[in-house]
Length: 306
Image (cartoon, rainbow, N blue to C red):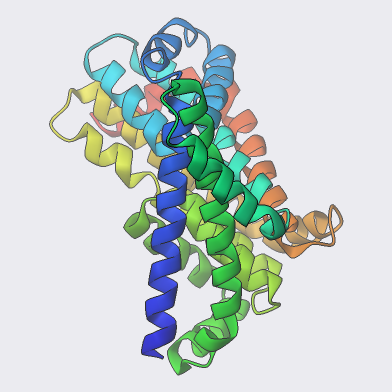
């Protein structure tokens, strides 16, 4: 039991490390330009959506985009209602990693790791950036394989075995689990990747895995909330918007979870791809649902948190 938990912690640390290294490589060319991009191309809700998608795809973190957005709102570089479009787009862009991880590329993880390691010694910023991306992706694939090897040993632990049984019957438990895990590790992608691994070993059913993914979407909002502490009122409203939109999106999705899971199962036979597609479709549909009402949402939040 102790050995399985220890290895699980190690693989989780490797996954997060790989994600940070990959994110660093992706951001090298955009780190200085990103705030200017968010400021310039977010004056309309649909432009904010596209900008948020681009920014989250580059940073591979909706939390990072939201922290930058909260900062821009705090210094009044952009008004609060502009931030809602960015936030909705960031929710879509951050699932790009999951779509990549859904493919079984573990056979090329070692070549990617070695190639990336060599590029990391380059003095060229371009090659160093490529090295970070390759090295980070390889670490994430290795971690995913590690999660799969630990799936069955972990289920031999009575508490975890009981949790699997309960989650299959009560999806609300999956939402709470995803929320708590994402709040702790500060990465909805990492939590969803773990669910993917357990699904691949047929230890977790699709509705339960989707519930965990939904909860992880809420849990990752805590980063933006922390960034807003001590900031202006509008900056806090930006963090609140991120939280409320994700909570309402999950609440709207839960009654249709079984139907949604059935539809997703038709898109692919691979359990991992099913969950990746579920994350993508959920974020796209919820973002497009809220986008036309971004100004009304802004006014409502100002009234609720006055």
